[in-house]
Length: 420
Image (cartoon, rainbow, N blue to C red; front, side, top):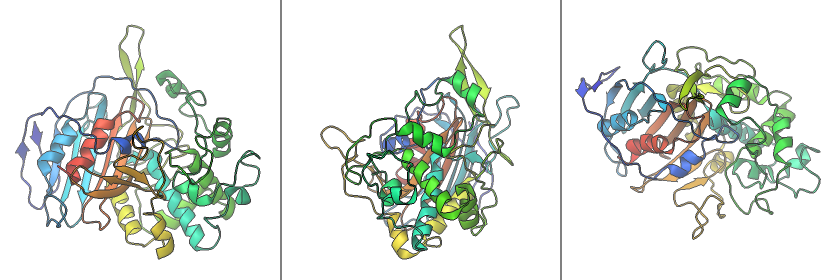
């Protein structure tokens, strides 16, 4: 297997064989959180072509806590993508080293390689942008994070609900219920048939609140979900008179010059270079066929970006360019409450916790990173960084299983970047 440099200050072509890799669980809980402001879907495996990894980059100066950047571990992580992943893209940045690599194909029909500057759908990574806008509105005294959302959106939630503080929407302690597989199409055939359907935020919330809340007292437990961010997006729209996509664009994308990032409302296409997204649809003979679902209604969580733009966004966010100090602190303020995603013996996950729009992950080597994962049909992505930004990783890959089921690969890429 040949690795060809795309751009490098210290790289030459390297050859390596395909390795077997035993997955760890360092980011398994993080991958479980990769839902597109909605529900994860059942996996349907399908074979994919196994082209070579293309990689570039060289290690830079390392910090005291971080291990030296290991390009071989990163190449191995990308090339370990399972057969139901058609393409992978990853970028590592920061003073502790730079590396960019791709694997697989962008188009199974033409065999075109994954573009290093390719754009991809973000899914729940959109939540970090929504949280940032809500925190900006709080800094402008247009919303009080301690006040109940019912004050700002009267009539949205059932009358028998307790007061739900705005802050709890952002840190996943709101107690709002989630959509179930019965609320939206979740089978491969249903996804293909309905991928252009529009589901307004108000419709999604109305469907979710028909279900039982996961716990009684807002702010007293943490459970990852999407409904709180549907409501947060509606809050942005109510307070500003604009769509949340427009507010993200004018408040974040334009000031940071994120020219390859868009927050579409109705456009079903992905502009510019990109890998195609596919879903495996079962055939009557027991096999499956790959259906191209690159074009789809963006819906909630429908932002599109690149690894370079997400790296720029994460850097600006961590450096306080988007928020003043009090609101900046909310990004890293993990509530000290038990989590419903933990084990019976310890209700709090061992290595994943949520703040406002960010998740905190402690890796097996003790390194703590902050970021977000996301998935939608045909696309899974993630962005993580150390708090001091000495090392950052952004990745995207294209699962044919519907999304939310690729724990191993979503674990391997960040682990290879921070804890090889």
